[in-house]
Length: 308
Ligand code: NCD
Image (cartoon, rainbow, N blue to C red; front, side, top):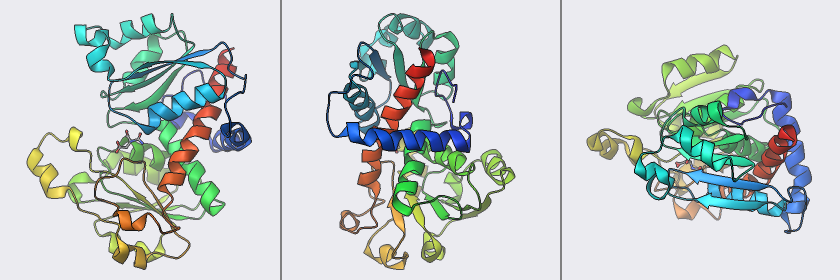
């Protein structure tokens, strides 16, 4: 892997993903304690223009566990100079004077690419609008491998808001790097994945089926990837009201799944997974969030190693 920035999933070949997963596994030992010196003397800035809990904190914890330090701008749209009208490019030109790596989340699709175009230090895209969330997808696929031992040959459903969900976009693209995946895109018509993206997935050789009812495929699935309906990205509140709550993983739906299936969710969840599901061993979403830490440790290490 030779990337300076981590901007989108397309940057990663299958082999590169696998070597990242191996590195994450080897870093799991470090995850148990703070005290590694791998990143000693290095500073990470996290610049978040949209809300986040897991992504920002896991990046920061990753850097701290590697021995580095963190500067954090939460709610950057309101509290940084963006509130005075500074462009993202100028903000990056400033922040790179104080940090060796910048983790950026922004409401605008393409913001990470704009940042990278002017950045002297590595930029990691922690979500840009409805476009991509590459580090989430890498940890999702890593979780599947940890839970089920493989990725090739699996039947996987992405469920919910597939048009606005950047995590859904990125995980679908990540999966298209593997072989013999059967992908079900389960969404109300208004929230189905964009045709151009579906074409891309099919042209990679993946078997893709679009449908509305999760019940129809539930018994065949190895992985059910639930997603939140992304209220903040709707221009019509009426449409949001109509489609919210379209899917619900509850005891009845759980009963239709294979005993070996796993349920993932990038989180936060609203009502698409009932709390009664949490105690089931197939509920893997909190384990998934935990893997975010080790994948991000591996990514930070990789990027800073490339950058010297
Ligand atoms: C996701 C995101 O921000 O895109 N959250 C996350 O990073 N785990 C999913 C979401 O907000 O629904």
